[in-house]
Length: 198
Image (cartoon, rainbow, N blue to C red):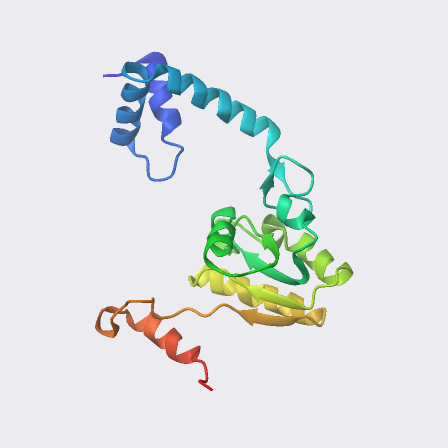
């Protein structure tokens, strides 16, 4: 039975997503038994990151500067704004799509049951950008969950109020997927979002 600092270390590791009691125990033992140097480096980098990494004043992504590299890049198209739920979603779009516009990172999604409202995900900041910026198109790239759809619907209303064109990324059958294995919700969405072939 772990006691004292060891127990506190294990409990601290459980703050990570997907880490339960057994995983936290394995990590703690590994760091203490086999990689104390790695543990020291990890603790220094966590402390340094917490101190130096904040949010971009335009897109809310993580950055060490007041304005992130994407928002500061004059080659990006400032007329197009892609709305994503998290920095991980933004990175996925950046790596997979040929997108050259700007972003707005919500850092979550609307969830009234969890007490998460518009102010908690920066929609006041987003509306300010709609009002004062030169944005022409808003691309909604929230996840296809109930909360993601509700968030997209809410943002769509805000954007239209400020006369912005609104589009939604398509959700549907994955490349290489076989129809018999695709769930009915995904297949239904694929049919709704079908494109005309020229």
